[in-house]
Length: 379
Image 1 (tube, one colour):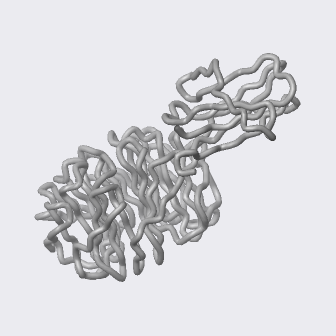
Image 2: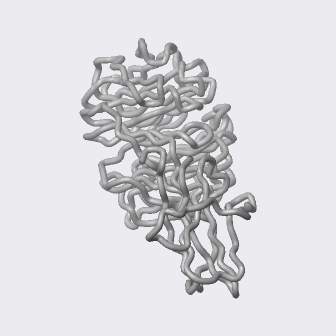
């Protein structure tokens, strides 16, 4: 069954009144063999092969094979956040009780660079030279332009919970504990408060160019918001779920992932307009994405590390006038539409006439007669 993943949807000719919209994809998750003592953060290289995960009650772990095997790299506990350069070589990690550590060898060795306590979140430019760190205890933001060797205090007392960075380290975003979101267009020298609404904004992620943003809060009600103009304006996209603990974005900002602590993981492939929940309700605390959005890694606080490299496309149906359209996300590489007229048989055949409009793959049947059953088969 591993190579024969099926997503079955029954398409009856009598169905009608369903509006056609962008189809959505879920994620298929694989638990890895590392049981942690309180995972708090995870990061990935751009290609999704080099991973790093940290615990509040344990050490730092790294992987060089997309999460299949993991190696203990540091025996210190108290880690709150970790970030990676695009090549996975330069890392920065926040230890809540000791300060900011950096590594220049993919996590094998670590050096304490800033001894200030209570850092909650860190982010890195693609080359690992420009770093930003949020200090929750003092409500401060620090930045570095030399891979973490020296740090400058940029703000004090206003905000400092979660941070994210564009690939070049120029556009930064920081969330405030109960005081909205702030953005910077000059690598953290100056900051501008943005009108995103009240709430406890706990998570934020950015596209590579810093224009597309996604943020989550744990207010009442809790919701996810997105921005397409570097945080100037925001659009609420999905509500409920509970405590949105972490969000991640592909480089182009189209594929997003979000975790709910004591909830599920949600995925979007249309920049946050629609979302699909996957896996079980767990204490999800952090999620990270490869640059193309194809490889996702997430951690459960008192549980295991999970990875996903397979998007499960959702097969949808729409009826209009005297036609029936079956559709699913484009491109959905590796998935083939099959059809059958009788579910009591195994006579599935590849559907012909499939087209795409750049957003969805689709097959239109005109006119639909009798019963048609469709499924997506993973090659």
